[in-house]
Length: 168
Image (tube, rainbow, N blue to C red; front, side, top):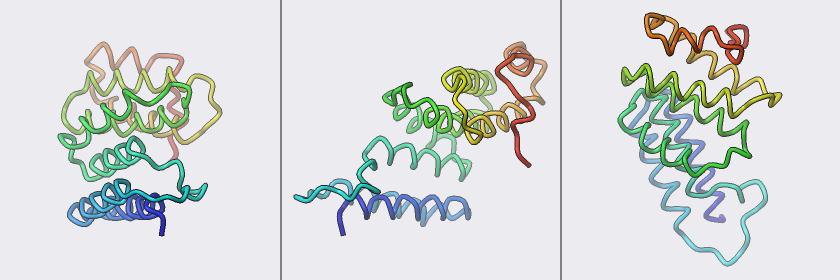
């Protein structure tokens, strides 16, 4: 099996375990995914796995730690990965930013979470994709209990925030 295929499978397994709350197994799968990416192969990766690289794996790692509510692990990974992620990939960058914003909020960094939500919505612009807007709006809704802060009030009253974008 091609190393990138293994990395993809391990990263998806890590995500599944993270959603189940199993931090130990998620971490083990992330480690195996990273090891797999480090293994050379003379053959080109299959198209369905060719996109997985160190940046994509870092984003998945950050997402896993975010879902596990481990913001001290998630934030630095996501910040670094997203800093190198092109705004040309607006949908993906906005979507992945939602986990960074969520991690900041879990860490009690309300202003930083608000800034990330605003940036994600701005990057997304008019991209016609429901998922990133719904995730960013869900984080914004979590921020609503902090309306005593001007940055939160500004976000919630802005044209870019759509409370109707949140799916139940």
